[in-house]
Image 1 (cartoon, rainbow, N blue to C red):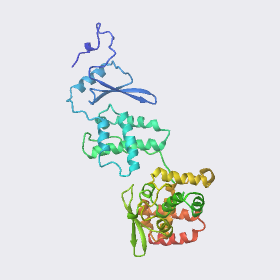
Image 2 (spheres, rainbow, N blue to C red):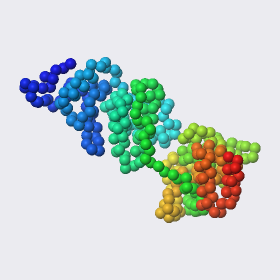
Image 3 (cartoon, one colour):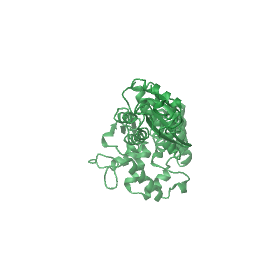
Image 4 (cartoon, helix red, strand yellow):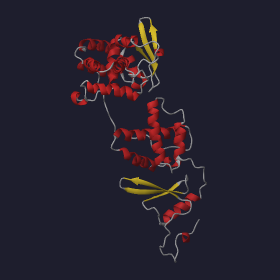
Length: 368
C-alpha cells in the first residue's frame, strides 16, 4: 500500500498534487443538479469511489483505492464491446424498422458509457446513472421510454447468456409514454373522401390496410406469393414482421378489387406512383399527405388519422368476412375484449353500418 507521503508533503501540510494516483480512471457524469465523478482503479477495473471533486483528497479515497488495486485484474469487458456483440446477435428484433431504432439507441448508450466496464451495471447505483442519461430525452416521453427499453434488453441478453454479470439493476423502468388510439378508425366515408382526391397508388395502400389490418411494414412487402386460393375464394397468408406470427386473412371483395387490378407480372402488390418498392415511411407519408389534401386534417377531425389506424377498421371488415373474435384478436395481437370494443366503436362512428356490425358483434360475442 502506498503511504500518504506519495500525495502529501511539506511535513503533513495539505499541499496536494492536482492529479490522481497512477492508473486511476475518472469518468465525468453530468447530472441535473451538477456533476459527479466516478473513479475506477484502472480503465475497465472496479469502481471504488464517487465524488463531486475531480481530485479527491480525503484519506478514505486513498484507502478505497488501495483496497481496489489489491484485487486481481480481470480482463476488461467494456460497455461498447457488449453493445457491439448484442447488435450482432440473434437477439436483435426481427423487423427492420425496429432493428434500426434499436441500433440507434444502443449506440447512444455505448457512447454515453464508453468508459465503463460492464461490471458497473451490477451495482444498484447504475440504475440512477442510466436514468440520468435518459433524462436528456425527458422532453419526449416516447424517446425516454425507448432508451430504457433498449438498455434493459441488452443487459437482459447479457445476463441470460450468463456472461460478465450475475445481475443488473436496469430492468422494469416505469413507462411514462402512454397512448390509446383504439377509438380512432377509418370510416367508410373518410376512406371514400380520401380516394376521391388521392392518386390510385395511395388509395390502394389505404384500402389494403383497411381490408387486412396489416401494419405498414407488412403492407409494403405483400407479394403474389402471399395470396392463396381456398375452396370459397382467396386468402392472404403472411408471417408478420413485428411478432413473427402467421396471419391468415380472407380476401374481402374490396381487397379482391385491389388484387385483380394488380399486374400479374409485378411481384409486389403495392408500389409507388413510379412503380417502385415502397418504404414504411413513404407509404404512411403518402396517406398522410393526401389525407390532408382531402380535408381530413387533425384540425378538421379533432384527431390525427394515420395509416396505422386502419387496423381498427380492418377488425370490422374481418368480422364481416366471417372471422371469429378470437381469430381477430389473435391476429391483431389484441385481447378478445379489446377487439370487441374496437369493432363496437367502429359501429358507432359509422352509422351506415351500425345495425349490421352490431348484430354480427353480438353473435360473435356470444360464441367467444
